[in-house]
Amino acid sequence: MQQFQLRHGLRRNGVVSGATLKAMNVPAAQRFRQLASSAQRLAGYAFGFGDRYVVVNIPSASVEAVSGGQVARRYVAVVGDVKHPRRKSRRASAL
Image (cartoon, rainbow, N blue to C red; front, side, top):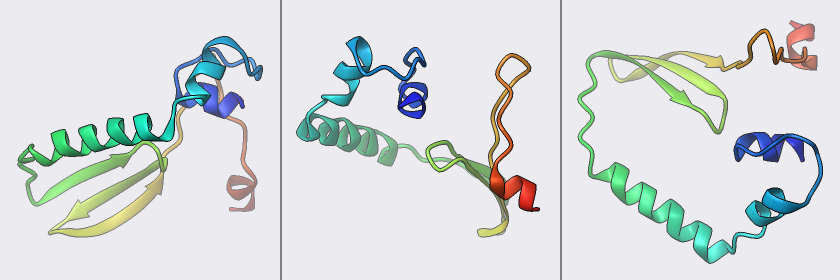
């Protein structure tokens, strides 16, 4: 629940009430309209990427370095700061 609250900019307390409950109860049709509107807006942009660029995909927490139209490197994005350190994941400790 705290991850949901974090993704939606809500106070992270793990409790399903108030703003959290409201965010969870958005009807699928309304969410679809929001996504369709965003996709249509983005389709109208002509992004002038050069030969080398970086793509950050926030929902998937990934970063890709692109060179010559090919993904040269792929990374896992990690976000945090001194006040909110990230916990070590099982994947990170296995490496």
